[in-house]
Length: 405
Image 1 (cartoon, rainbow, N blue to C red):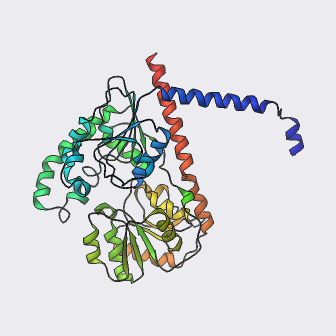
Image 2: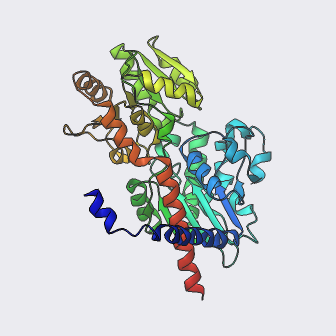
């Protein structure tokens, strides 16, 4: 068979084919090098899912200028820190390093204060206001949308409902939130094309902005993790400690179960969550990539109790061959497979202690193949994301050039 194939394949064509591919790549690079590119990101305060998307943008377009509301120096990867970074007036306000969310009503004005004159192309990574950047006349804008502004849409009650915010804050937000929603919708018209990080978010973009969105799932650095069959007897939560992540649900459940639970992450909910946790629950704070890989490798399963826009953390756990116990809504439905023919985890169907307890009990008697779980995670690997973004940007820019001819 190999001989027959070789007989019909003209080996002399290989150099010519490679030359053509090389010329195409050079042409693509030249067409992008002619553009002044602005990258826009909400804020630079740590390496979470949105920043991992931004990091790929910085690798693709290192010549770009990066705009953001504020920058806590040293909080993001070297790739991002090396960029030329321009910030808004939020970066000069008191307590901005940790209390920047308190300035939410000022965010629209802050993003609109940034000067994009002279930039031909804007690529924004947005979950709050980055997509509201004002392009210069004739400039082209693609937004990678992690979600429409969650604080004033589907998670408003999680941030500003009773028990979550004080009386004064709730009263102020009842006035501010409608204005923020109006601005969020109006500023969506500054975007030529939306990319959603999941079908879940694409549905929200359609619902709130009345605009279509193409879906490109965010990157997972699967090579950072190795398949592990170890079980060191603990369950794991990896999460920012903010209300909508529902880490409180995991803590309340494991308080009752008495099983060991490790919590990786930091955030404004940290003190409250530690105050309600029993001794079987340990808070580890922020962990570097190496330590996080070790923690994934040793866990029994990842607990994922919130509704996420997409959720990179479950895929990091699965890249380690570990199953995920997730709330069965939102982005988890696009990453976790709860199917006896090829399971990568289990869903619980309501956000209650009893539902999560029942699913942990079911998990204890279930079987999972670490290598099959890893194979599923590899579908979301970082190189695939990078190439999809590169091709998408080039395609849309070419469409725009043809339209302008």
